[in-house]
Length: 234
Image 1 (cartoon, rainbow, N blue to C red):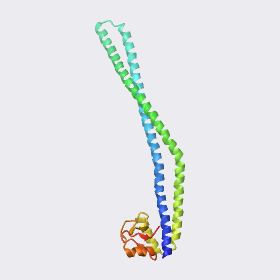
Image 2: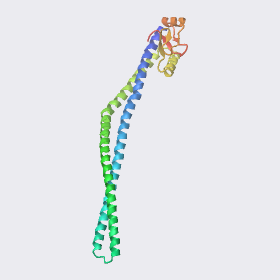
Image 3: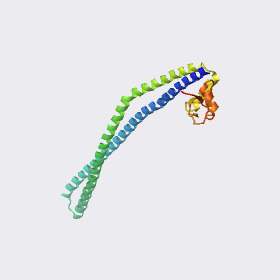
Image 4: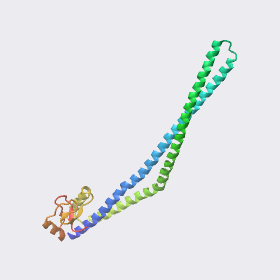
């Protein structure tokens, strides 16, 4: 039985390492995915701001076209003023010229607003491109390393499981099955030490006779509360 306990202790040590490696199999992909997401978000921000900037510039050009069209009309009407004979026609045409000039003044103000917004968008775009480059550089620098680490950890877990399963062949199948259930359901802690006359897994107080049996190591002793295998020392 002592040999079986020694085997179980070795298996538990391997499973503890496997548990630590399993954490890495989640953490490493999360790190990689986080970098990919950061780059994706940065790309989307740059794309959105670029579209806003292009739209702004298109609107400015349309406003400039409106001003030029109004200027052409003003020049045309001013030439017509020289040939008009009646006072009524003169006032009507002159009123239209004033209206077009006021319209151009309003459009000028709108263009200025667009130009201010354009300057802000360019500044925003420059900042977002810097973030984009940082995200791209970070992913480029770490992608291969993290992918390699993920592969290495997966291989290490496979090797550790093979070692554990090889050890398991030297204990009764029933005992191994119970051990496996504990590993699965007890946070990968099938074996725990008895410390200060209590189960270090759940804190349940160990009866004196049970404590003696644990020290003897002549049988597999289970915690009366959590069901874990109790040993003197791991």
